[in-house]
Amino acid sequence: MRKITLALISVLAILLSSCGNSLEQKQTKAGFFKAQELFSEPTRPEGQKDVIELKCDPIDTVRIAFIGLGNRGSSAVYRYTFMEGVKIVALCDLVPENVEKSQQTLLEKGLPKADGYTGEEDWKKICERDDIDLIYICTHWDLHTPIAVYAMEQGKHVATEVPAALTIEECWQLVNTAERTRKHCMQLENCNYDFFEIATLNMAQQGLFGEIVHCEGAYIHDLRGHNFNEDGYWNMWRLKHLEKTDGNTYPTHGFGPISHIMNIHRGDKMNYIVSMSSDQFGMSKYAKEKFGEDSDYAKREYKKGDINTSLIKTEKGKTIMLQHDVTSPRPYSCLHTVSGTMGFAQKYPQKGIALEPNAHHFLAEDALDSLLQAYKHPIVEDIEEKAKEVGGHGGMDFIMDSRLIYCLRNGLPLDQDVYDAAEWSSIFELSQRSVENQSMPVKIPDFTRGSWQKLNKVTYHIN
Ligand SMILES: NC(=O)c1ccc[n+]([C@@H]2O[C@H](COP(=O)([O-])OP(=O)(O)OC[C@H]3O[C@@H](n4cnc5c(N)ncnc54)[C@H](O)[C@@H]3O)[C@@H](O)[C@H]2O)c1
Image 1 (cartoon, protein in one colour):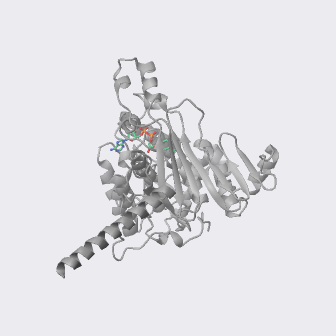
Image 2 (image 1 turned 45 degrees about the horizontal axis):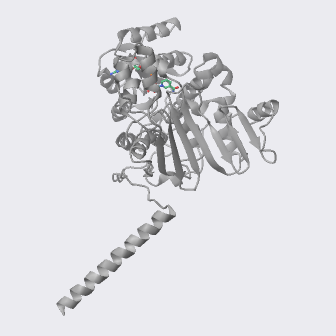
Image 3 (image 1 turned 60 degrees about the vertical axis):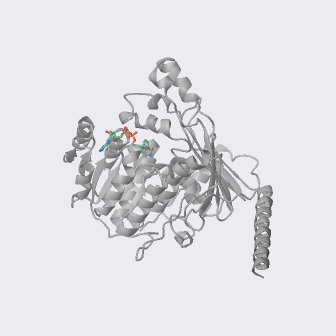
């Protein structure tokens, strides 16, 4: 009897396993590859809440420390000399001349000198001070998350240059620290505030394009001259990343604006990504031509394929295409393509908007200008003139800074929250994993852990 039972169990097991196989085969034929869950979502610690629409106490005068005063940090200090309601308390860079240069910027504007720091870990001392509200990070990428996390732990709000994080693990560190400390962590994605991008956000929110179905964003910027310049980026940090990392290593400029248009974590969420990179050709060619066949640069191996393309599918059935290319000789582009059921917008290569019932053609130039004027985002209204005067990528940098300070001073939620920072930066590692596995679909973690359904659109708050 026992033998018969065992035999029956074995037959059943074989039947069940063959069922499983045939199901798998059917799915394979139909193309249903399950996205690989390479990164688990850590459960939210008990008592910890999300920071969706986080409001903090208003700060009358925002006391700021700038860490990293290279190209980007020094121009940020310059912009802040035009800002009301701020006090620049500390300036920090490993290179003493960089600190001195920014001190001069303050002096030229009649502002008091800030405390200068030049030690490798002086950013810790700065974060520990009790007379600073905001830590503004403009170092190379590797220090963004470590400084941001330490700053929040010391009770400071954080604004960090892009990308905020380099790994999924770092993304979770930012999210968990912001949730635990109830501090703001904003990634300084300036492209969200460029005039065309923010007008198209307004248009999308007012339904001009109908249901948004697909968007595209990119960072296509020939940086070879900068990356291979020993006097360029500090310690040639950008080239070093290209040596060791494939995928989309600078996703946020193209992604930020379309992510807000698509209501990511405000009613929709990203589910999975597939990513493909070309091989690497351009950097080796450039290095050989510039430094010679036998040069160290020509012999180095660069992991980063010239052109990376990623596709993302959202929970609500929308698609996103992202591209990255810093190596090819071609004009700059962030794409900024918005495609809906009633209209279409694109910024590059030709700025244009096309609307039903004549969407076969872009609007004529004067009609486009009038439309952009009519849909000017309310946050741009008062500040446009000053932003253009101060500059910073045509003014968008100053709008970004002004919005950050305005929201902090008024105790309002910031335009970009820590989940934006994590989501946009997560493409850095997610695209790598997909690329190195023949473009395998990779599940995108839900950094809000379910709270993405609380809102239905992004709001840039005004008092
Ligand atoms: N949003 C934009 O439009 C934009 C444009 C350019 C750069 N960026 C971002 O800004 C950041 C900085 O870029 P960059 O072009 O200014 O690079 P950079 O190399 O010119 O500046 C980095 C600075 O960090 C300093 N630094 C290094 N280690 C430090 C430490 N331990 N403590 C203090 N300072 C330290 C270096 O001395 C250097 O001055 C990067 O994240 C980059 O991606 C953004």
